[in-house]
Length: 153
Image (tube, rainbow, N blue to C red):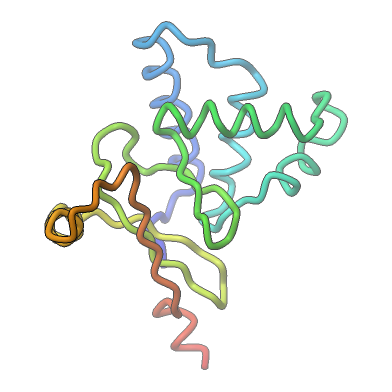
């Protein structure tokens, strides 16, 4: 489903963007934060907190609160998105550039693709406004099958 053909480049670009964002905001991009972000980008599927904790193994004192605080930091700084329906996280392909994204989630291979379309978000905001509703946060998740999985079936 993903257009990434050189996976190491994706991970490298994500870590480079995180370095820049943290430097601009005068935040510490600690070894643990770097490692968790790297683990999330290892595949284009989603990563659950406990899977991340397991992958960290003995390298860090990876207790649930530590991993969740790290994930909160990454999310607050636009480096990852939380996929609520999966209770999992995916790397942001363009940190801090767009807030109007939605996600295509393949129920077969578990890949998640981030898509941006401001007109979709505009339509949702207009509908909320017409209903006198003020959204704080919008996450649109669309579950189905990706082209690769459809071809296999």
